[in-house]
Length: 298
Image (cartoon, rainbow, N blue to C red):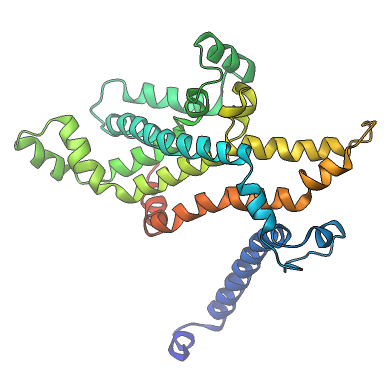
């Protein structure tokens, strides 16, 4: 540690200290709200109602977590979200990779035109009503495809993968072509194994996007058994807000206290966050490298 400071000027030491301080404060500001929600999820209902919970649980209990886990709507939403996240991410990565690879080749005919078209649709879209009409005409309402299609192609992620491909050595592909490798062989047996950092990074982007998405369910899903977990959580929160709407004539306090209580909502939030958090450690080693390498060139 002493040698670390000896090799740096006073200004560099102050700058490093300020950076570490800002990062620490930012990390704390990000962590504290989550600690608050966790504390309410494992605290007694009385402590939650009185607003006594800050960042540490009071009268620790796990009954609320067990109650949420035993709720059929939560379990059904969990199954739907897991299915959509896994298969949606696989299909999205397959589409992203197969689009990014040819666009990374300068010799592709019409390459600039297609890139401009993708950038255009990234900035402008048809809107919510035309999208709904399109999904309805295709018969996708109240299907799992309606939950997967909206996030299946991210132009930003595609450009990130395309930029990564452009930095791969051409000599490797040329050697494979001399040995008789086709384009598909090059992509799936050579390029993709070399691209695991950016593949892992973009896969995490897609997975988090699918897991946190609720708006597609609100727009396209009316069947209870097809609601994703985040839509269930959204309806749980909005139901609580409606319960205390000043325009509401009658409020079923027993139902609010037992079903839509703050501790139940907090427990639902915690349990819906845990699965996607478990994915991150497996991709963490690729995450930073994938973002850095894939964003060097424009």
